[in-house]
Figure 1 (spheres, rainbow, N blue to C red):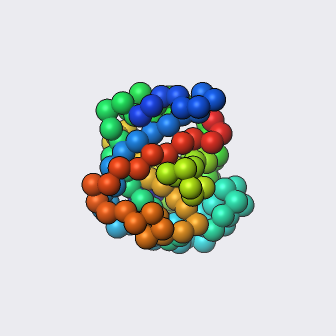
Figure 2 (figure 1 turned 120 degrees about the horizontal axis):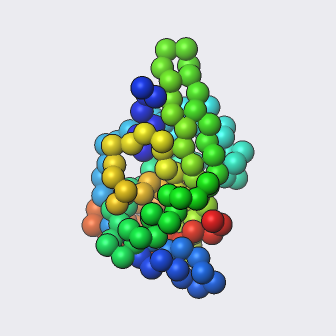
Length: 147
């Protein structure tokens, strides 16, 4: 996840948005941002869980890009920006998801990111790579629970 300084199937069962993508290693910054107390407090209050200090990155398959664009137009759950007096940190929006039909988590969409629209970042209360035995290149399906 890069909340830098401020300067698949489109529809699954019951019309839910589903995204599929392949796991890849990111920039390694997700843990830092997720661990910042301002963000962490909001994640706990607004998402209902204390996130593992890191994100799982998925590069979406071609069929999921349309669904991702639909998601981008939605309001989501707002994570407010803040300043620590030295740096300004951008806000984000989140969407509650079910990962691989097993683990509740959230997609986090930072207002500022190095990634393109073909990438999503997942938050969960557990280390997803370990919990789902994932490696780079593995395919993961994510179902949006509320949109």
